[in-house]
Length: 155
Image (tube, rainbow, N blue to C red; front, top):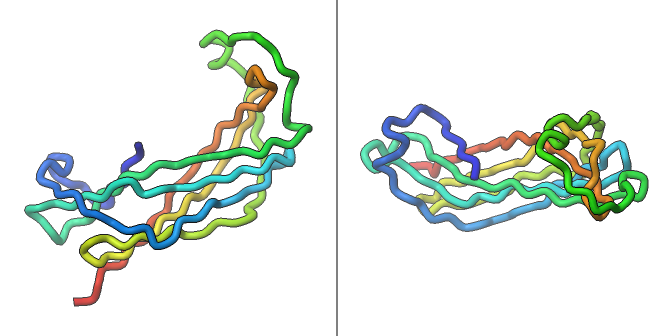
């Protein structure tokens, strides 16, 4: 679970309340990697908290980021039965891949207090390991940044 906090909150939101939310729109973002693999990525809001004692403070968001791949044939390796050691996994070579954005959209949520929240998953870097899973699928490391916009209701 990843948390975004927009301003320092004392006692790590110990006095917080959980706010319910509704999903307005959620999208899969898509990217084409330089090895012709397609990456689908999504950020999903999983929780919202707000301070009870300081209601004008910012929100704390919990979210999950999900990735799915459609591997190209040239990206795959040979299947094998090898089990890698921790040292092999830590010392393997990783190649930086270039990618193009096929689609990136804002997910939208409505909080119970009528605040609108928008989250967007943005891929900022991808590396590919020189090791492969036992079925031959490549191993990628995807670095993402989650952007947010909060629009409070007019009073």
